[in-house]
Each structure stands twice: as C-alpha cells, then as structure tokens.
Image (tube, rainbow over all chains, first blue to last red):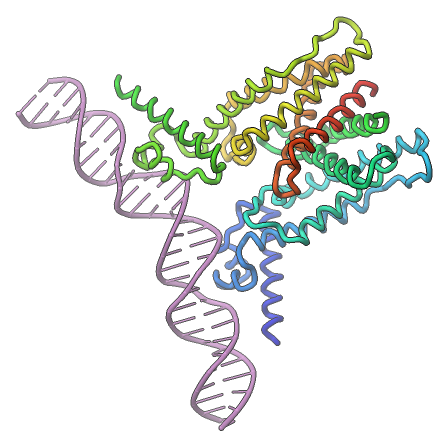
Length: 207
Length: 207
DNA sequence: ATGCGATCGTGAACAACGTTCACGCAATCG
DNA sequence: CGATTGCGTGAACGTTGTTCACGATCGCAT
C-alpha cells in the first residue's frame, strides 16, 4: 500500500513539527491549526493519524523520554561491590546518586520546554502501557546505587525508595526552575542538589 | 456607598463559589459561565470585580495557603537548644522536619483539588507581592530545625536549603499523589516521607 | 481507454471557552 | 419630574479542539 507510507510520512511530519513547536514555544503554544499549516496538511488530516492532540503530545513526550534515556545512560556509574560494601564504596554509591540527580537537572535545564511538557500535560484517559514501561525503566538506574547503600531492602521496597528519590530530585529541579517560586540559576540549583541528595544518600546508608 | 458593599458581596460570593467548584471538581472545572450561574449574576459581572479568572484563582489559592498555614502551625516544634545541640536535640530537630513534611502530605491528601490548584495554575503575569510573601513565610517553619542541624550556615544559605527541603518534600507528595505515575496510598507515602526526610535530616547533621 | 466504486483528505461547521462592550435600566441630582 | 450618570447585562467576538458531509483521487474491472 502506497497509502500506508503516506500516513507514516504525515505522522512523522506532525511529530517533528509538534516537537519543534513544544521545544521552541512550550506545550501551550501547540495549536491544531498552526500544526496543520506547518506540515502543509488539512486540519482534519491530523485526526486521521492521531485520535486527538493528547495522543500526539504523548508521542512527543515519548521522544523526550528517549532523549533523557540517552542522557542518563551517559552518567558514570560506580561499579557494584560484591559482598558487603566498604565505606569508600558507599561513598561512591552516594556520588553516583548525586551524579544521576545532577544529570536530571542538566537535562531539564538544557531542554526546558520539552521537559516541562512531560509534566504539564495532564492526561484525561488512562496512560498507555508503553509510557509506564519507559518510566519504570528509568527508575532502574537509581536502584543500583541503592542496592549498595541499603542491601537489607527487598526488591519491592527498593523500587519504591528509588521512586521516592526520583520524586525528591524532581521536586528540587521542578520548583527550582519554575517561575512560580523564585527561579534559581543552574549552578546554585546544582549546589543544592549536591547538598540534599548527598545528605540523603549518607543518611540512608547509616539508617 | 451602597454600591461598594454590593461589589464586596459579589466578590465574596464568587470566591466562595469558585473555591467550592475547585475543591469539588478541580481547577479545570472552573468555568466563567457556570460561576455566573452559581452566584446568580451575569457573565460580565465577574469582570467587574476581577480583571480575569486568573486573578480569581489566585485569590482562591491565597485562601488555600491560609488554610495550610493553620495546618502547619499545629505541628509540634521541638524547642531550639541554646548553644551546641546534643545528639538528642539533633534527633528532635530531624523529627520536627519529618513532622512538617508529613503535615504537608496530610494537607495535600485532605484537600487534593485545592492543593493541586496551587500548582496547576500557570501564571502568565507576574505574581503579586502578597503571594510571594506568603510563600516565604511558610518556608520559615523549616528554617528553625535547620538552625539546629546546621548552625554553621548563614541566613541566606539556610533559607535556600529550607526552600530545597520543601521542594524535595513537595516532589514526594506531588508525584506520590499524582495519577501520572502510579498513585501511592497515604500510609505508604507517609512511610516514604519518614524514610527520605529522616535520612535527609540525619545526613545534613553529620555533613 | 473508460467508467465506476471505494477511499481518504478537506475545510467549513460546531460546541465550548475566556473576554469584551454597546445597550438599557435604575438610581441620583438639579 | 426629567436629565444624567453609572453599572450590570448578555449577545457577540476571537480562539480553541474536534467532527463530518462532501468531493477529489485512486484502483480495478470491463
């Protein structure tokens, strides 16, 4: 079918245009009519490849998650010690946590609009499975250092704690960059993350 | 002027109706036409007492902040030791931090829609001064225990750290209650807060 | 090659939204 | 009592996202 190919082309063009608009002007600037004009298709054509704009935004957000995945895999991870961890190895695990958090900050600061779209987008329908899968996948990076700091925790407790560490870091970055509270410069914010996540890691290890 | 009184009555009625709608159905359910119908005034009348709906929402949010202020002042605060703190006094300060964080969670869980409105509302204009003042005031509660845990910090550094602790806690609560990630029950979330904020407090004290 | 049916993009139209503004009513003053 | 002033009114406007009857375009059989 030649038609399938055209559909795929249109879908890709819409994704590109939507991503560009979001990255340049933020999620609220994404308008169906502008989008159609950008890719040179009719207004209704959008709805032949996506059920609604929500689905399109979700697809863009998936791209953002993939981008972030590449950023996070570039973080240097301390090797997991075998058996009980030495104090130095625990320090290394804490440092890994801090590096992961700083990488999160760096990504958010480098892609502010794209990153905001991840959270600004309020979903009405249930989220698709692949979206949740991607989220869980990202939490795994946090679990490795946690295994060193808290070898006593079970799989489930560790996953929960990893989620909580992410949430705390997200809070720091989110409110730090957001204009609702006072905006902090990236270096200042980085310092706060190092202090807070560092203290958090050390506190977890001894508790 | 009898007219001034009528204006004030209308303003109060609009605030009440808007607050009720937000509390019951969330910020997105707030519609100008419904609001006018609720208070029995014309559509345009709203704009004779508020410049736009944003201002109305902001006024509702101020009420929410006042509510929260009452909740947070009910938290038991460990007395500030004079001179250097003993280990027991440090523990008490950490516990105070945990209690403050749990109070935040409790408020958010008890008033989910009102609390969400505080952050869902994206502001286009600059925020009014009284709004920022109220925020800073709330951060002060966190600074007292921090003074015990980190007497070495200057006023400015402590204020910044207090803000960061709030941000981290907010992240925990926000993502914990939000349906975008998996929703956690309040007891589970409370446990996570106790673990994370507790570790954070202990880590800060030794660092 | 030609006609016919199916298929799919089109963009005018719809509903709902926040916001505005010319009108008309009512109260006040000369 | 009539003129004037002030103010609430709600129809109307400009934007939204989404839909759907229409018409063009393509594939296939004749």
